[in-house]
Amino acid sequence: MLTTYQDFISRVDELGFMALSTIIQGFPSLSAETPGNLWHTGLDTDPWQWKDKAAQEKQLAYGCILGGHKGFVSVRMYPIFYAAYHPTETMPDRWMAGKVSQTTWRLWQLFEEKSSLYTSQARKLLGMPPKKGGNLLDTAIKELQRDYYITVSGNEKKVNADGHLYGWPSNTYTRVTDWVHGSWLNPTKDWQVEEARNLILDEAASLSKVSDRRLLTRIFGFP
Image 1 (cartoon, rainbow, N blue to C red):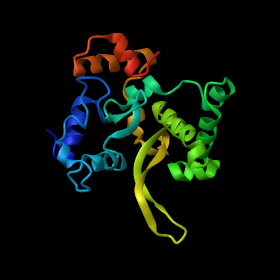
Image 2: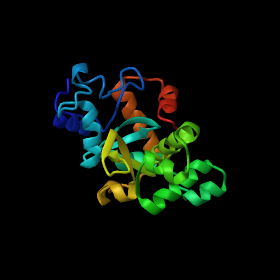
Image 3: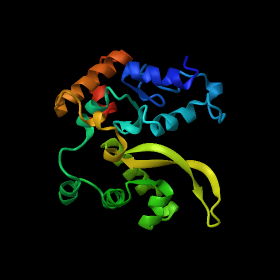
């Protein structure tokens, strides 16, 4: 079982990628490989803290980056995941072709302007009340993570009108091109989309011992 932050980093580096919680029976996940009594303690041994720390320190990528599921990707595997998931068309072309929603398009325009945002900031800038626009915004944030446009870069607490911090920390999201080290997206090999997807599925099958290729394809969100 993983009991320290460094054990966790080493484990994901060894595997190449890991889920936050169970996405398919047998596939490695942080929740399955850590003692339950360590979670949500607020201590350095709390796995809930590790996920944000790993992203903030750029030890691992974290977010909805396993086909839309929350998980982690190592530096070694990141160029492969980027090639497998990031669209080859530009975002304006995708918008003009009707491949992204209006909310996703507007949110991406904010990231083009601001680079980094957390959810409440985005909601305010988009003029979306939590109850009416929350689901649309959450879906857009998830889509931009899934397609490797943005990534979790840490977290921070909200600030009230008096300048005081309050509430639970909120994830901060940053454009991938601003967050990653140059070497993360400049591998020695130029991965083609299908080649990258097949490698991910091969690795997922090996790690989980699941032989059903169609199931793995669906889980990891490939067409």
